[in-house]
Image 1 (tube, rainbow, N blue to C red):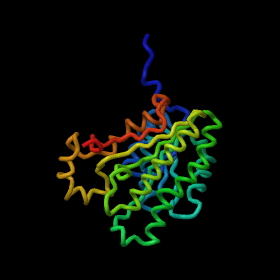
Image 2 (spheres, one colour):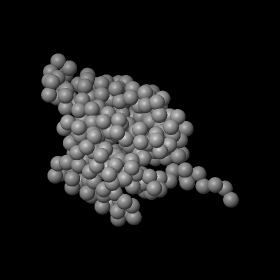
Image 3 (cartoon, one colour):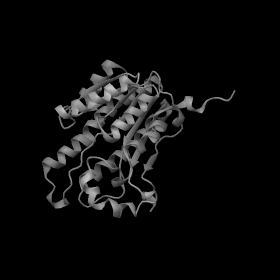
Image 4 (spheres, helix red, strand yellow):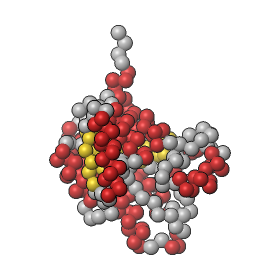
Length: 258
């Protein structure tokens, strides 16, 4: 009897923390990980709307026979990453960290204010760094771990009005490469998953006016959907991707080569 190659995708007895998992890309990845057995920590920014969305994701996972819990934490606050790491670790040791939560505040470079700069840095870099500092070393000590940072085509093709956001995504990619070298020998892989033009609530208004023109520059001929990220995330988070480390994987329909 041939071995089942799908067994390497199983995440049974693994715990995954997905930040910004209450909707869109984060939700799609969380549901995918839960579908192959992972226990899910669903992070949200702790507003009433986000709590309701996160609870709905938890309910969907539980209805499917899985285990999940929601954790609220505003990444703009001081020590937010450390607080979240402590709360989730008290529930279960974290084996998989998916850094999906981020914010983008479009504006021309000469109008960037300190307040808006600091908020994007806090949410996109400072709090994720705290999570990496607190959660990755224990993965290494246990001899198994997966980190997937959710990047963007902005990391190499920065939009003129997203100077800060694009810069944070470029920095995040650099961190993934750095940590991949540091922890690869301890059974921990660190990779960056870079979506292209994915149709989400964040960009739906923009895509309503620019979507058709953008499709012409995408070899696949369509905009992406959040579920398009699920398969790549499963690969990078499981034993099926155990020898993939320090990779920047585009899921963009070929836009990065067009």
